[in-house]
Length: 396
Image (cartoon, rainbow, N blue to C red; front, top):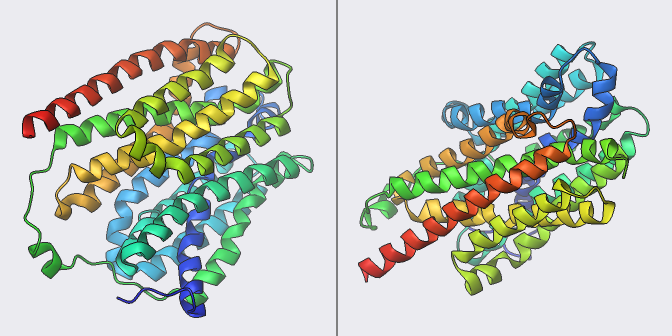
């Protein structure tokens, strides 16, 4: 399959159409600054249920990341992406008009279904369509588009909340121009295994233990990332150091940190190798220390950046490690399993937040108690790095 060149306008538009679907993949949680206002609008609803507005899409995303594989086989890539974007558009309208909390939650679940339906295609369309340096360049841009979507959405949420908390859900209306652009410029790309190329590669044993370790670590780190994303705006309000709009800007700062981390990740990995994962854990710890003991806006800003940067390096690190542990024939399955781990972490994060807060009356308790768990996680990362080093030495 031919890759578009820099001088091919149609090829550029096709590439841009493929990249554009990644603008929405990290946006379900960025409406978390609306949660304090929604809680006031529905005082009889528990905080755990209110938090589901931010995290429920991740559960349905995880479900349809798996089911999407069959949908793609049934109707093709183009119709799958377009159907997903149509569902996102419908969920946006329902979120704006939902008369009660339960219909609002249902519309959020529909958002996750729409995004999850085409989420596996965000990378696979690139890997099946492009080869060589062009593929590597577009894979890097795909991660940047995710961060740009989240950062731009966070800034828009901060502005739209001045109108009404419901107006914040208008950010998902970007699905409409994405749908139009994708329909116009991206063909129906066949995603199928190339048997001839796979036969040229000797099969290797899949290291399921390593993949399980990667899945566990990415799940734990993702839980802490989502707790920060959801709780930071409410934390600022409860601690009287900022407004929900300020919280939205800090969530946007986390996305900016993720973009920066994605840009420098290659150099970091060349320098630190597997110790990049330890750095990610340390940055997560620093971020939570900034919130757990002293309520200060400067520290909150530093903490948001640290958490976002951590996310930007642990995701490519763990996805890359798990892919290297799998035989090429199982690469798509392993990637799907890792995506399910991250989405389940997103969905369960409010329950872990509630558990970590315990009897503490302040949200600061969540961050303070989490630091101890993160310290245990750092021990797990050190053990993982030691095992991988020992395995490498034994193999040589």
